[in-house]
Image (cartoon, rainbow, N blue to C red; front, side, top):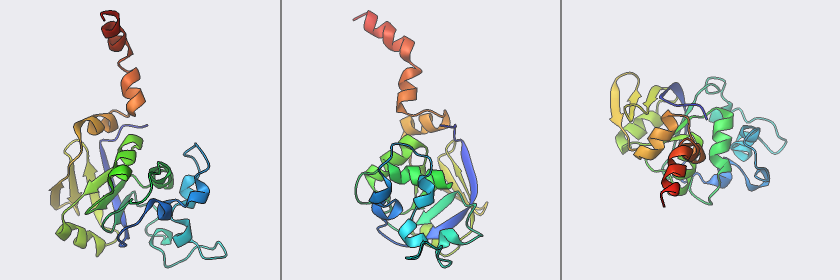
Length: 190
């Protein structure tokens, strides 16, 4: 995992509440243990019609949104089953952060472990972001802040361990292996 200090991007907006993990990546695509290629199936039942053609009215298919690394979603994003493939699909597609007023706990934890930053904002800022697709934002892990259109500064909460791991490009296993010598020394004294 690459270290993440900040993400500067425009936003893509999915204004729907209660987007669950089966909508993010349908179960028929999770029979893999690799992350590569899952972005192709991100929101596939919404992004494509019954013939497999891209729906031009779906926000992620809009050419202006294709390079957006920040997804602004409705309330209660990532609810449903525990599915690590959901953050994998978002990351493989190019999404690096998700902004909402609420993000389901299991999805939030899976995201943090895999390098996707979940950002919880207040209702007023959320409504503004929902109504302004393509807004420029900066997600700063260093400051634990979200800057909207280079003007509004919002703090967001992230646990210190996850923040440390993300900023240093470590997953939980990487964190432990970085301390292998310290662990061995401790165990030798027991």
